[in-house]
Amino acid sequence: MGLLNKLLGIPPVGSEHGHMLDHMLEIVHWFMLALGLGWSIFIGYSLFRFYRKRNPKASYTGVTSHASSHLEIGVIVTEVILLLGFAFPLWATRVDQFPDPDVRINAWAEQFKWNFHYTGADGKFGMTNRFLISSANPIGIDPEDPNGLDDIVVPELFLPKGKKVEIAVTSKDVIHNLALVGMRIAQDADPGKVSRMWFIPSALGDSEVICGQLCGAAHGNMKSLLHIVDQKSFEGWEKDAPKFRDTPFGAEAAKKLGLSETPAATPAPAAPPTPAPAPAVQ
Image (tube, rainbow, N blue to C red; front, side, top):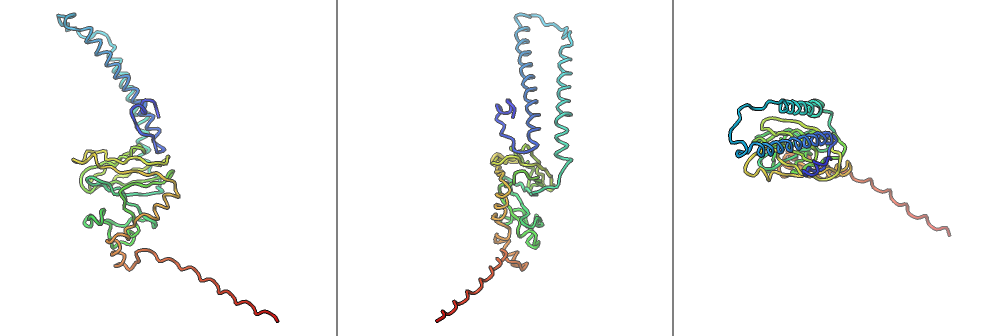
């Protein structure tokens, strides 16, 4: 991470594409610093040079040199370089080149919390129905779809390091924004619409999930956590995480579908009988 990024308190990058974005941010920050210093010097000089007592009579001739035009052209050229050389290529890789993901998640936003929906062991999302949404079924998983019984719905994100992650983002009420600051990526959550984003986590650890779109009076409290763990830990978490079938609503659905709440364990084979000792020879 660059010097200015550190001074501005930007958290460490945690995704593979984030380094390119941080590099662009560092250039932009130096460019803005140069502009800020330049304009400050110009304003200070103007206040000193054209102080009323020094110039009691206004001059309407105006600027006669072309220095300002050259500066404006330089600013435009720099902005074009930043757009064409950094922003557009980075944007293209994020929106035009979606790879096949290793992990797929649905993110559901609502005032003022997040719900993250995982497929479970079968790798298939259960169908959802907005008319089934309730406090017991926050994303409206359809109880008649057996694919949803092993689905996981949690308020925090758990992801494996080094795997391609795709998150489909939507909202249940107003416009929100899923902002993963450590991953250097964000996506709007629009009601009635599904938007996708993808990234590859590159560093273990925890970071903050926030809403990047003003969404109401408690917008600042709409936070969650992102946990990046190794593959073994992720598999263990996925195995132990509460499933839809573990909830009262899901257990009743499993019973109606004729499926057990938890798969029955296979009994261990019985040990062979120990032969009786042979009688001693007299």
